[in-house]
Amino acid sequence: MPTPQSAIFRQGLRAHEHLEFDLKPGVSVDAVRAAFAQLKDGGIVQSAVAGFSERLWRLLAPATEIPPGLAPLASIHGTAGTMPAQPHDAWLWLADRGPDLNLDAGRQALAALAPVLTLAEDTQGFVYRDGRDLTGFIDGTENPSLEEAPGVALIADGPGAGGSFALVQRWRHNLTRFQALSQEEQERTIGRTKPDSVQLLDLPPTSHVARMVVETAAGELKIWRRSVPWGKASVNGLQFIAFSADPQRFVLMLQRMYGAAPDGLADRMLEFSQPETGALYFVPSTEALLRWVKG
Ligand code: HEM
Image (cartoon, rainbow, N blue to C red; front, side, top):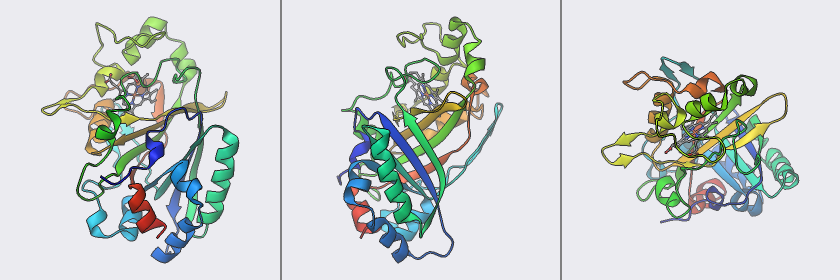
C-alpha cells in the first residue's frame, strides 16, 4: 500500500492549526501545482496533513486516482434540525510542538497558495488538560488503538489506496448551558462518567455514545478521531477531525446524531454544541500528493 500522510497517526502533537481554502475561479491545474510546489517538503508532508475536495482532486488527479464515494458533504435534516455543510476545496492541518512553529508554517502556506486559493477558515486547536474536551469529558477513549487505526482510516486498495477520507467540522459549545447540568445529567448526555470515562451501564439511547455506536452486519462502524478543542474564554468548542476508509460511516453517524436515522432519536449533545462548519476531504497518500499536487 502507498504510504499514508504520516501526521494522520502521529501522537504527542500539542498545537494545531486548521486552514481551509476555496479554489479561486478560473485557475489552471499548472497554477495549483506551482503553488503547492512552493511549500517546502517539511511544510506539507512532514508536519501537516493535506486534504482536497472532490472538485479539486478531480482537477489534479486522473480518474484512476479518484476513490469511490468522494463527494461534497451534504447537509443532514432530522428531528434535531439541519446540520450545515460548508464545502471548501483544500484543508491543511498543521500540527507541531507549539503554536509558534504552526504560525511560521501557516504563513508560508498562505503566501504560497494565495495565487490559487482563498483562505476560508483558520482555526487554532490545543490539548486541554489531559486530552479532554472543554466539557471536561475525556475525548478519544473508544478510538481505535494505533495498531488498528490504519485499518480503520486508510483505503486498502484500488483508487485512492493509502489515502483516507477526513471529516472536518468546527463545533461551537455553549459551556455555560452544559455546566448548568448536574454531573449526573452531563454523564447521561455523553454516556460516560466524567472523571474516568467509564461507559454507563444504563446507557440513555439519546446519549452521544449510544448514538455513535453504529452496529452493521459487518460489525461496529469505526472511525479514527483526531479532534482538539479550539478557542478562547469567550468562544470555543471542538474542532472535530476524523479519518475513515469509507465516508459513508460519517454520514450514518451524523444521521443518528441529527435524528435522521429510522429511530428518529437525536444526540443530546446537540443541545449544547452545534457545528458551524463542515466539509469532507480526500487525504491522498504521500506518493499521490507528491505526484499529482506537487509534481
Ligand atoms: C461537539 C462535538 C463532539 C464532542 C464534544 C464529542 C465528544 C465525545 C466524547 C466525550 C466521547 C466519549 C469518549 C470517547 O470514546 O472518545 C465521544 C465518543 C465518540 N464520538 Fe464524539 N464528540 C463530538 C462529535 C462527534 C461527531 C461529529 C462524531 C462522528 C461523526 C463523533 C463520533 C464519536 C464516536 C464514534 C465515539 C465513540 C463511541 C463508542 O464507540 O463508544 N463524535 N465523543
